[in-house]
Structure formats: structure tokens, C-alpha cells
Amino acid sequence: MLRLALFCTLPYLLSAVAPLGWPTGSVRHRYYDTPNGQLHYVIGGDVSSSNRIPMLLLHSHPRSTTEFRYFAADMNPQIPFLAIDYFGMGYSDDYKGDGANDTFCTFEAIASHALEIATKEGAEKFIVVGHLKGAHPAIELAYQATAKRSRQIVLMNPLILSPSAKGKVEKYVTPSLKGQALAVDGSHLMAAWKDPSAAPMGPGGAPWNNSRDLLGNQEKTNDELRCLSTGWQYDAAWTAYNEKNEPRMAAVDAYAESLLIFGDDFIADCAKFGLDPQFSLDAFGRALTHGHNTTSFLKDAGQGMLIQNSSLIASMVKDFIGLPTRTMV
Image (cartoon, rainbow, N blue to C red):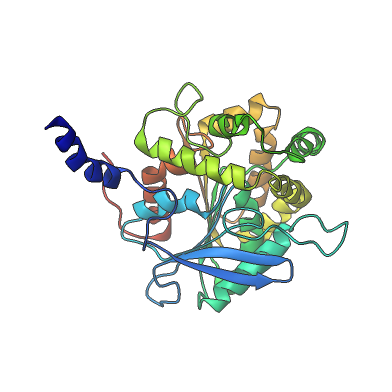
């Protein structure tokens, strides 16, 4: 009888386990050909509708569009969105350079491709949203879009590097990401699972038993393994763009409202690793001078806040874009 009961219960238990990635039927998967490879992107809702301006979402590193699945679900009422995988991440092709010196896709180029995809899908206007390193191509996207196409931008944990911090990333971080390989003993799996980069982690700095966090960490691990040999390209694009952040943000600030959301733990971690977050905050302070900006700091929120704090962040974004919100308990 016990065996029969377990057999009958098994289908329910399997169905209760949430699937990895975008839930089936929640988005439409599309591809866009570029001279340097094919970009994968997903669409949620009707991005061409004139009733509600969609969001254009740019993910962090080492991640993919799936890091927005919880945020998108918490944006209730649902906001149409378009999310793009950077080259070498998610389901996008690895970057195929034009020569030995063309080793990564610049943020200027990825923003241009994002505009082309938005036009293809009929999204003439959109709200730009970027997370962590994805906040920086988001700045470029808002800049290229001009006031005709984007008048609101949301940046989560952006970081403009000081000269010394940029030097550290270029000298130590980016080279350490190059030439990574799968380990025979599978240790690369544990390393990816325990890596806090852009992942939800518990108070002890390791994945804990919250179901959303565990699922999010599985997805992050898959994303990180996907870009094991190409992830350094995102870092290279980030540092190459660094000096353009402030002037581009200043230009965008002239016509666009902006919402900047920082996690207190993220700021503390940046300081701990010598990335000088105060330099970044000061740079944004110089750029945002037109009274169009709102900056918020979330207590105890870190790199994984887009998953751990997605309900709160969704509520803040809805307030920012003028949608009704539910009372947070």
C-alpha cells in the first residue's frame, strides 16, 4: 500500500517542482540575425500595443533573460516586455568577430541591435530596464533611442568604475574569466553553484532553502556554465564603455525620467572588493541634474535582489511608471 501511495503521489510531486527558465507559454522565443551571430530574445505580452508602453530588459553577467522571470511575474498588472540575451549568453550565438581585434560586442553595438529588434517587433516606444552590468548597455540604449522612443529608464545596481577600479577589473577579473574550462571531476559545477555573482544567496553567502532562491540559483548556475568560455566578453565590453556612462547618462537625463535602485549589500560588497562605489554614486550625481531622477536604496539587498526582492522592486517600478500597485505587507 505504501508503494502504491508513493506511486500515486509521484506525478503530483513532479508537477509541483517549478521548471527552470521561462515557464512554458509565458513568453515567445525569437531570434534576430546580425553580422556577428544570432541574438535570442523573448517577448511577453503585446509589445506593439498602443495601450501600454513595454519594457526592454537587459540582463546582467553571468546571466540571461531568465533572471527577469520573477520580476516580470510580479509586475501585476502585467507589463509587456522584450528581453534580449547578450552574445554568448542564454540562447544567443557566441560572438563572431570581424577579425583578431574584434573580440566582443560593444555596448554601443548591442544597444543598436536592441533598437533594431524593438523596431522589428513594433515597439516604437519602450521603458529601458537594466540590471547590474546590463544597466550600462541600458544607458546606451536610452541614449540611442532619444526622447522619441524612450523617456523612462530603470537601472538596478549600476556601477561606474573609478580609474583604479577599472584597472583592477582589466588586470585581474577579466583575465581570470578567460580560458576557463570544464573540470574532469565536475568541480566547475560546484564553483558555479556557490558563485555569488548575480545570484540570490542566503545571509551566510551561500544558496539557502528558500524555493525561489534555490531555483534562481539553479538558473544562474546554468547561465554561468553556458558562458564559461565567453563571459569575459561582457566584462571587456563593460570596462570599454566605462568612461561613456556619465556623459551618456547626463544626455539621457535631459529628456528621460530615471529610477536608480541600489542594494545596500551590493554597495558594501563593491567597497569590500575595492571597486569604489562612492565614485559611481558621485558620477551619477553629476549626471542627474534635471530633477527627473529618483534613487532608492534597499536594505540588505545584494547582487541577487532582482530575484530575492523582485516583488518590492516590481512595486517600485510600477509606482515609477504610473501603474497601480498593491499594498505591500
